[in-house]
Image 1 (cartoon, each protein chain N blue to C red):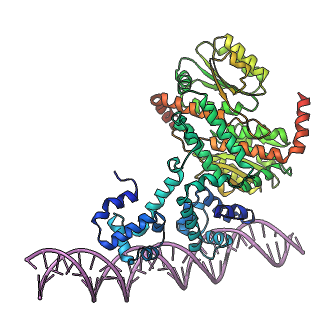
Image 2 (tube, each protein chain N blue to C red):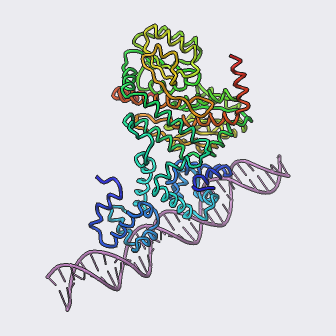
Length: 275
Length: 275
DNA sequence: GGAGCGCTGTATCTTATGTTACGTATTTTG
DNA sequence: CAAAATACGTAACATAAGATACAGCGCTCC
């Protein structure tokens, strides 16, 4: 049974030619408002011609454009009148494969932040923002992208931010540059990597301040870490989820940026002019 | 200060003549949808004539009817997207003070998935799972880590998964290996990168199937993409958030894994024994 | 009670919106 | 590789939508 136009579209999008698919995707991405505008606006946004929009609409089974718009409006009216339907909507078809995954992920985030005080985050952000030394980031097999993500942002707002990549021997050698004034951000979730643990231990011995992102079972690195962020990772999937840690990382990036507002604004301008 | 048209109306309804007041009341009663319909329908519903509607609209300060409709649509768009309008949000039990950042992120995810049908995800997963050709992944300045994250997982459960890294010239050269049977997964959010767009265009010309992860404003790459995933990125921060896209990526990884269950299980065992 | 003013609807006009026809480009198929 | 079919956009077209002019009506205030 097809109850919404959005469903109808995803049902038939496979059978559509390329341009009509663009129209469909544009509509889904700006659902449903773009469909209430004129054909001209719709087509311009989608980057196709007006007739393509009309063919698209006709393929969905509508006689003409106004009829299509009326259908969208009716749908919208129903939605606006019963706010409940909106929350129910995604999960309504119980056998949906997506929802459990999403629900679990959302729960993980709430749970992760519940165990994470504002003060903790603020402390870590302050530590990352104070420019006494260098900041190094590294991650494990699956979490290294998170380290990269964070490094990509931090490197823009402040100097001396380095992501440790490549072979173990390469980053082990960087230990020589690390000291008391420096911060090492490590991502490590199950199954914890020996190489990272060893690396963290050595860094700790050299007096490096360690910020650890790990899962709720805590990587052994927690023993050496100055700050530990424990994220929930369990989802109904073959893999663990790093999404909660990702969000914490983004939150931290935002907090650090705010603290460095004045400096970073100038730095970002300088960077822009370098392009 | 007057922020909504509804307020504007109740502000001025006192100064209106009888017929216009009927128009105003009709609009409030069916807010805002009746205002998106034609003047004729609006006037019929209100039981007044078309010119009365137009005078009413003009008295509200709008130059013409379309301008009035645009204002209503903008308002509606803001309402549909903002978390405020969403009713009982499961998170709001106490801890919502933790961080507006978290709330916004959670909303982004719900919103992203609301625009994403199971079928769409299943289609993409199927495409990624069918082993006819190779899978390439690449991302932009901030999103490349997402490409890496996905590549790290997919590469474990199937062969011929490559993350395109390093300098532009390097991955441009890889185009020579790409053809109809191959899939290219691209991550590109504002500000969209020219190099990526060019790359996608060339790949598209070679018949490569493109899966695009982008933001709700759609990267220009959407024109060439077979599948488009539009994630919400707005958060109260100096940066855009890729968290929603991250979760979609994880969901896809999970779906592909499930589809390849039989094959991948064996493959994972083999990999384990290689350690 | 009559003159003036303001409100409202009918009828007409204009605009811009949706629609369609057709030629070119692209893809598919034999 | 050629021919057919399909897809797509340009441009002309028709129509329905919004805008305007004007006349009738009721109301108020001298």
